[in-house]
Amino acid sequence: MNKWQYLEHRGGLFRRAVLKGMAALGVAALATAWFAGSASAQTLLEKIKSGGTIRIGFSNTPPSAYPGKNNEPLGFFNAVTLDILKKLGTTKVEPIVAEWGSLIPGLQAGRFDIITGGMYILPERCRNVLFSEPIGKFTEGLIVPKGNPEDLHSFGDIRDKGLTLVTAAGYETVKTAKDVGIPENRIMQVAGPAEILQAVKAGRAAGGSAFYFTVKDLADKDASVELANPYSPSEKPGYSGIAFLPNQQAEVDAFNKVLKDYIGSDEMMKSVGKYGYTKIHLPDGTTTAELCKE
Image 1 (tube, rainbow, N blue to C red):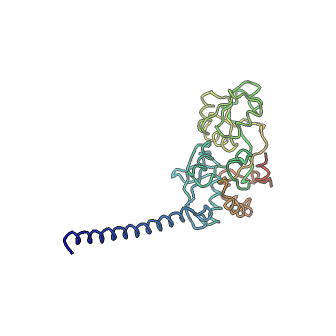
Image 2 (cartoon, rainbow, N blue to C red):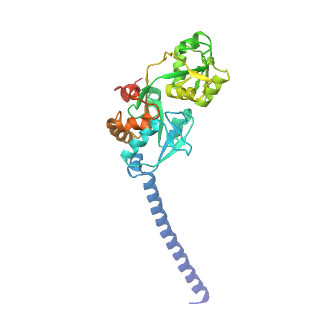
Image 3 (cartoon, rainbow, N blue to C red):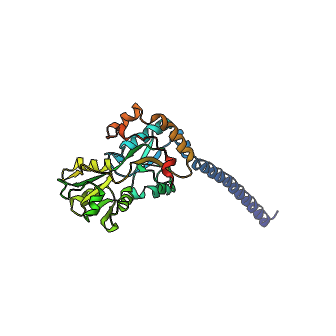
């Protein structure tokens, strides 16, 4: 074998070694990708049962759902969710606070795994998410400046006096106000409870409306406003649930199975009582299927 034949032979051996190594790496890469794919294919229910961390999304709406000083999930909807998740297999949660109007888009985009913010179960929402069975029934409330200078006791009063109502974008109270006949240009839509309060305090709106517990909390914390009293709700009671993605029926079924024995129990009432939730707020048997009907 001359020098050139020797070099060609060595080169061939080197190329074969490289190709063999690449093939081995390719197999390893494929194996790694397969294991990664298997992990990412884990369902939410499997994640819960294996003790994984569940991302819960809610807006800052005390006392139903809100973050504590260390971002811990507080409020009665979060309390119920934490109890049920524990029974299903996990105590690990990652709270993610978002504006009310971005909760459903956030769930759809994968920012969090479930919505614990206490959304009313409504047909238009049922087209985008799956709801658990109801956690409670509630009505809206109305805050007004101290002394109630405009003598407001209903949405009808605001309509008849040509005044402005402030509420949050995405709240059911927007639709309720329109149904009552308040013109759209008299319905101020803001980001959330803090902005509702500021609009009333600044005189930009005669009254502010939201979930009853939300406006009660605002009135309890700020002496410059009060709850309209007496007050005639403009809507029938709303029923709130926990929201999941449309392809998570197994997760909803598992949640509901635990909820059935938990709802109204001494354990539940102990968890939610400190937030003002009482037995009068327990659901009355109305089902999610009934509430989702058009």
